[in-house]
Length: 531
Image 1 (spheres, rainbow, N blue to C red):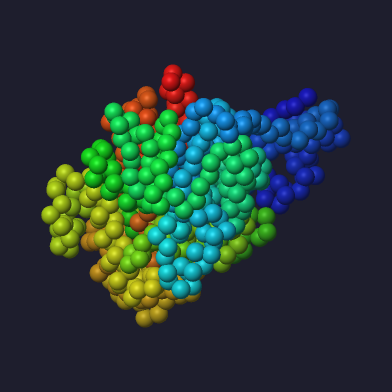
Image 2: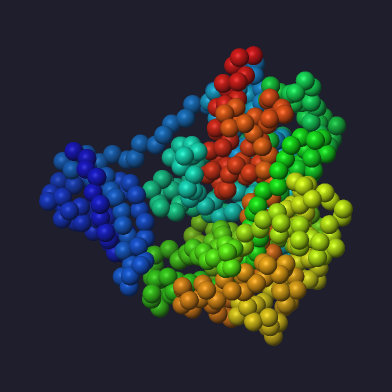
């Protein structure tokens, strides 16, 4: 028989199969010899006390042969000659998973990606890191896999009402991810492994008859009788389809401007902006695991922090244990930082975005103070996007150019003191000591300065000058929402135009974007089957 068993084990016990079988025997009253094996169903770390426990649920095989986990299977149809075609703008998680779902539904996806394939994209990232030259169409945000490729592959989401999370995780495993993502409480793949998985997805799409075209930047929409009948690309091509999925990500400012210029409704959407904070990983391990050394059986420790400061939320975002801070700008003259980790999370630093909620009024007031309102109407949907851009430009200038980032030690930051020197940092282009209160808008700076002190009380030892604060973490989510009907999922003005994923304001990470892409594809199949 098979039996679900809940266990609480020490880290080294879980690492040894014999120990787990012994624990199953004690929990079920069955002899060890009758237990042929087990599958882990759920697993999480409990680090609340001095003793660190691993809580797990296993499926034990008792008095019957052990069977490996049955993985979900997928049937991707041949669509080369399909009568229905859908244009997908953007090859990030939303676009890729929409395309894979369309294959299963027998519809041909035509994927137009402004950036380059994984291999060529890596070369452009190396040039950005080493030489300070950013390609506006091939960077940490644009290119095969989108921003998700270089976001650590975090697969945790609370959006369980938006779609089938298990299906998304199983698709990742199907294309090469480790099975452990199916049962870990906070699964991640690792930036070093994601490119191979994304490449495998592309290979499947092409093998099934999808069109996958790189360096195809969409610059205009052809609109007739309330429908998008085609899209124009920068090299003069016109692509036609029965529907268009807009999955361009949170940094495609030119697309937001295009929609606004064509009087296609968009809305300003509150987002969050702040800095990247980096500590030595060993310090975070000590603080979270209450020990001098975490040992070989525990992963590098993570944290999640949130605090209300004068009614405004300050919180950690995209925490990367054993990670690296990377330059994530998409245009020259703008400085953006983000974080990622390899699968082993074995770098010596732990970094996290530390950000503050930004509302429309904040953006308008800050831009007025900086004399950068540019006569923009008070009701403009672009206010938050322009605010975001303004702060990035200020950060770039403060760093001295060439993507060198302005930075301070954490305690110095909160005390308005320029750091006499800066600790070692994973940010490859380099950091320079700057008074960040002169770079960040006042409400951002004050919220962070008090927030760091509050976090130090919650997590003793966190508020330290061993930590470095690096500006600017500004691409937490899209500053724009593109409206869509809650049932048909189409834009209210265009019956076959589907805003999708994080860039449209309907997702907040890889899994939620992937689920949104699938949901859009399913809705399209219902709609175009009527044609």
